[in-house]
Amino acid sequence: MPITTAFKTEIPRISILDEHGNFDEKLGKGLIPDADLIKLYEAMFTCRRLDDVAFRLQRSGRMGTYPQNMGQEATSLGAAYALDKKDWLVTCYRENCGLFWRGVPMEAILLHWMGDERGNAMPREHYATPIAVPIGTQMLHATGLAWAAKYRGEKQIACTFFGDGATSEGDFHEAANFAANLDIPVVFVCQNNFWAISVPGRIQCSAPTVAQRGIAYGMPCMQVDGNDIFATVYAMREAIERARTEGKPTFIEMVTYRLADHTTADDASRYRDKAEVDMWRARDPMIRVRKHMEKLKLWDDKKEAALLERAEKLIGEAVARAENIAAPHSADFFNSMYLELPPDLALQRDTMQTHSLGQDPSQLANTDHLNRVTEQAH
Image 1 (tube, one colour):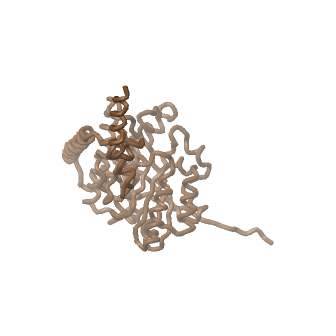
Image 2 (image 1 turned 60 degrees about the vertical axis):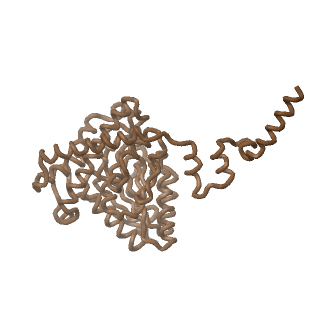
Image 3 (image 1 turned 30 degrees about the horizontal axis):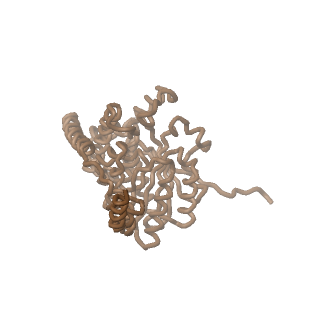
């Protein structure tokens, strides 16, 4: 028998506004209204300013560590803009811009990196999960959330973010396998910033694209210019429509770059060439949006200065709320553990004791009587 082709496919790459200011009118026209584009730029700008402040907080000993979002703002922001407010946003730790757009207060992020777990108590109305620092675990959470919504007959979907290195984790493969085989409405967004901490992507993945890792599971896949807010919105809307109407997952590789160190505990200059960083700095998502708005006469230096003033005020207030938050109470550990606290644990909370006396305070009477008998004997 002759040799035939068992499978053949292609992965589309989406770019609408490039770093040179070229704008694809056919794909981009009407995609983001001018008023919304200004708000999106303001969101990226404010997130970038928070990065600067958080860096100084860490260096002055007021924060443990911090992973800057610089250069990757358009990925999560484009997704949050396209998603419904009741769709789950399941993040790792470089999606501040999308979380802020969703309504998560800035002090929540600051508290998390200050070591205060109250920063992870995301209000339910934001439909955002706590920041996930372990690599890849959040993809399973997103799949479970979307599966639960499907089981209940709801139209709610989930969107999860992870880095290129996370696609080497078993959690990614398990989540992708479940989502594709069971038709679970999840959007998998891989932020390919070319570095898994200090390990280059070419060692993590030998395939020409990270996007094709989703093909093995039968998912539609796309590669997107992740520094292009228009392209991220375009791709997300296609994936969201598929999830909403067909209940099927999509894998999106958003090609981006972290312009800062992996975290404040890292020194990326030890493993990245300056020329590479400079090349990507010219592809900054904020720079291209501002240039595009200036061409459209939507933005100028006066508006930029006013935005800086507003951003500094907002961030200063968030820092004050984070640093001046009341100290946690020991009872919080119990109250946050269960929806309805079992009686034995309620007793531990109220007595702050786990020994038998704490479990049964009525023994105090017997103890007092025993002490008096002992004293009389002496």
